Length: 438
Image 1 (tube, rainbow, N blue to C red):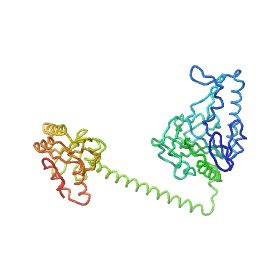
Image 2: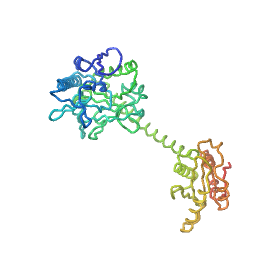
Image 3: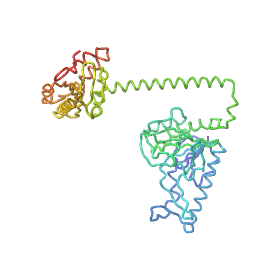
Image 4: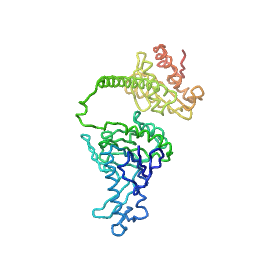
């Protein structure tokens, strides 16, 4: 494999380096490794900074630079198009922000960017259309949150090895068409932005990869070049004519049947994985009694715990829910304090809710105050979960006072096969501090 690195610091067998203006025909190589970051050097020091902040070249007084740039870009663009469309080669581009450009002050003005070198392509995937390079935007966005990498592409080892180095830009379509409609998305960040993209272009491929700033040139060559060799060794072009599928070979149908069976198995395993994740989320919700995600997280955990104990629950307000069972009705308030014991204000709020419910004619309900304090500590090492005033007030008003840890232990007993009815009876009848007693 013959590869040409344009501005890309990479080492390996078969890799030649050259400047854009001095390189041999780009169509004479198997792969072009293009880093657009170095292209603005062609006009820096020659363009004039205008009042609107744009760098401009003025034909007639730039010593022919603008004309030379336009001619060189046109020539190299045609060479890349020939490499992709006729030579079946690869063009690999490091995705950089590409904000720097020069405007040639003709009528109309002509703008050159580092990506103006890419061939003009019209991609169609009904109902979507995408024109390159104009329709592809490189949005400046730095990060190290490469959250997903295609698991089965030849470039996967390269992407996985350098993912910690991060990216400098994300790829988006200017008209909103999904990039996955035109090529294979190879990597995304945690919010779904496309970071790497493999686009079939007739017989060749146009590949965009994260910039991976600071990547070791030798290691990059060791991982990238074999992957490109594997792509070049594929004899069948992407997206062949429709008639090609009619020419099948002996044994191919059996292979297709195995692929269908494998796809069905993958769907089954995916469904099983989702079921397991859902079951795990249910257990995680119960652990919210020990280390909740704030006040709302504690309320969700209390609801999950009461439902495991056999109550049917519905929210009353942002901190209170109503639990119903054959043993009675409970008005349950979840109180969370990350730094110190629960204070009297939580007890008063529950008393007011009980009085209001009685006054409005909703019947009698037993008050239950669930408290979690100092959640950063192991439950066995925590200090008092409520003040002495809260303890006395709950006993005076007939309210059950229970810590998140004690409620967790009760649920744990039920999950081991213990009786739920006894726990429900105790919760809706106790006054003052409640502890789980097996």
